Length: 408
Image (cartoon, rainbow, N blue to C red):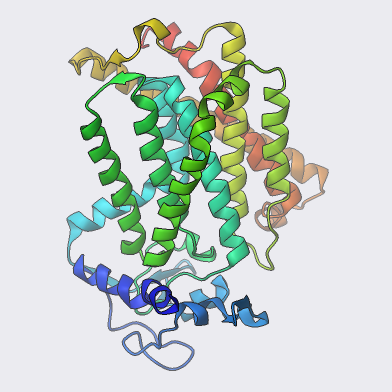
């Protein structure tokens, strides 16, 4: 078993996949701290990477195996702005673009555009199911990362394309978890809502989730073990929770306890996120996700109490997909542009106001603002409030604005 884990976690597997896809590390990379080049950089097994001894995490996990140490060991060079970037060569540009676009499905832009797009163009019911499942798997995945503290693949031999997330730990891949959860939650939930051929939907779900999973190898951010664990964890969580989806829907929409519970619990989890001995964006990302879920939950409950859910009547289900006429496409594009503009403006306004108030409350000097924004007592309330309002605005106000503009 240990040999299989070592094999699946080997950085050379990732590097080999990258080379097959036309992404290669430059031979001109700088030497590492051991004096070796990218070609002869020593590899470590999964147990060595994790700093484990007899199945227990050793005290040597930090700083030798921390994300900061991994970045020092990576084949990066500084740029003129003081940052770092990998030395690499792209020999297959179509795959490069495809995998970077696939990887973007796990970034912040996805939270603000793609998920709300399901609400605007398809069915708010499906968006609600997606947000609920996505929140669960992402929270579990993010917490496991910071509890297990397993580093990402080494560079060299791997080319790393995403510098921000390299400050996070590796296993499990939350991109793989989210892609699996979103694709198959949509498939399972849409069967009773929309008329479509299940086999086609299954093929689309498999292709999209596979592209996101492969993108984590292509960008050098995860080992094959990280990705497989992400898929298995997501599938397991969906299997365990699937029988309770409808019961949670009823609680979320009808119970008077829904708003306080579904705001207080995510806020509690945000404040009590596992503490690390260095800064990692995982807490901020997790708070963002929990904030979106809290705001959406309050919004969905509010719509249900007002009797305006913007969902198809149950007697008409499953509904046929509307034809893709020029008028429908124009209305869809208008909804997308208006909705994205409203959410981005909301995000900017609430974030700026919350940070300004928190900086004043904690007497933060202007020159200390960037580092102060990472402090838990500032980062958590600012992120949570910002994205709670974004979720609330999307669930309650955006569709009403579409009605006023005549584009819904």
